Each structure stands twice: as structure tokens, then as C-alpha cells.
Length: 351
Image (cartoon, rainbow, N blue to C red):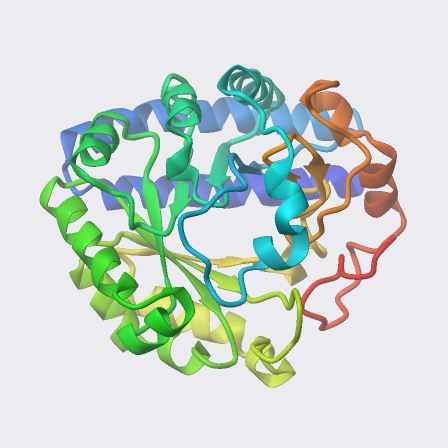
């Protein structure tokens, strides 16, 4: 129980720091300030709920990752969703908006601070986005390829400040288009310009690979996306799905923490996050409910998006029961998540 309380304290400190950064990012935008006021009240309540859960010996996740659809309008090179899940996943019945709404409510009651909406391409599920928008005190960053953002979506994001878009790019134009398709980089930056013009808070997401780490984790790149209007960047370490050609070397991975710290010091006005994150300070991987877990489009409760194993489906049981599933409990208790092995993912091959 002591370790769970220590982890809850770590997650609460991380959450508080995130809340302070959101205030700095608001930049006197009245709509952002109103939402952030609600969100900060929500954060204080969720921190208390997680601390109480840890005191009982229960898992208390800081956030969830919800892949609300398996469908996508692009076919990016190296997409883990296609490589790990394939056509069978896309053919399974997806949870409807009512089921997602129930999950969102259960997450709030457990003390979850934020729910990351992913896919596939989540903008294809406007019904689920509307369900998320109704939970006005919760934060739902939506990770999108950015190509579907039109005037209707601009109006939606303008009205629903609790759903900030996070647009995916790979770095420069040539590299982004080589992985995502010709003209995608231009489309994404056009979407950024439209969001900036409407003063809508948004960020970018970058999958960091051996090929682009020397480009995207630089002051020049941060300057470019800041000038485009982004107020957050999420660096996601590439986890090999079908082959390891794009994976960073051990030396590149070892340098991540120092490079992130340097970029944060140089750019205090932009939120810079790294996923998986600071596993040394948190005592290992935060998957399987230690800090987060993943829900597939069909409702499977999985340790992480990169580990599509499940023994529980949220069509059948509430969120609280999923946290105590045999799979999640085993991963949290057998030490597989706590070792700092230097591998890109502790869950690959973990039982």
C-alpha cells in the first residue's frame, strides 16, 4: 500500500504541474480561462479520489487512453494500429456513444483527470465527441491526423474548450509526407493556421523515431510549431510493431530526458510532454492502471495501446472492475512494470 500511495502522490504532483501550465497557456483567452477554472476544480477532486483509492490499496489511474474508433482515413507507414490489430479489429462492433458516455462518467467518479481520445481517426466519431463535450469539467485531448478539420470542426472546438485537438506530424514536410501521404504536412499546417486564427488551444503529437529524433527534438522544430500556434507538443516514443528499423538506439533513448529538460527550459510557454514519460521517477511503466490504461474501440480494457491483450470488456463490466482484472492485477504485482530494463517497452513479451 505504501508504494501505491507514493505513486498516487507522484501522479498528483504531475497533475498539479500540468494544471499550472494550462493556466500559463490560456494567454488571457476568456473561454480558455473559464474552462481551465472548471478543470482545476476537477483536478483537485480527482487528486483526492486517487489518494483515497491508493489508501485502500486500489489502482488509481491519472488518465485513460480511449481509441474511440478503429477506422481511419489515412494509412500511415509504421502505423501501430494496423500492424498490431489489423482488419479483424476494424470489423468488430464499436462501442456506441452511450457506452462511451457511461465510461466517461465512471472515470470521473474514480478520479481520472483526463481522457485522451485516439483512434484510428477520432474525428470520424462526432457522436462520441459530443458525449465528451457534455462532460465540461473533464479534459479530452483528441489526437487527430488533422486532415478532417473543416469549418464545422472549428466551430465545435471553439465551443467545446475541454476537447483540445492534438495534431500529428512527423517533423518536416518531406518526412511527414513520406510516412503520412503527399500533401499531409501542408494540410496539417493549414489546420493549425485556422485554429490559431480562432484562438483555439491546440497541440501537436510527434512519433519520435531513429529517423527524425535529430530533427523534431530541437529548438528549431519547437520554434516552428510555436509560431504556428501550438501550445503543447507530445513526443511519443516509437514502439516497434512489425520491425525495429525506426526504433531509436539505446543511446538516443538515454538522451531523451536531458533533451526534453533542455527544451522545456528554453520554451516555458509551451507544454512539452514525453510518452511513455519519466519512468525512473514513477517507478516504472504506468500502464495496466498504475497511471493509465487503454480502451479499444470495441471496449477491451488493455494495459496500453501498444499491448493489445485483454481479459475484460467494458460492454460487460464497469471501469472499476476492469482495474482489478486478473491481467491488470498480475502485471501490477509481478514486477514486470517496475523494472527499468532499457527496452523501448516493458510490456512487449510481458505476461
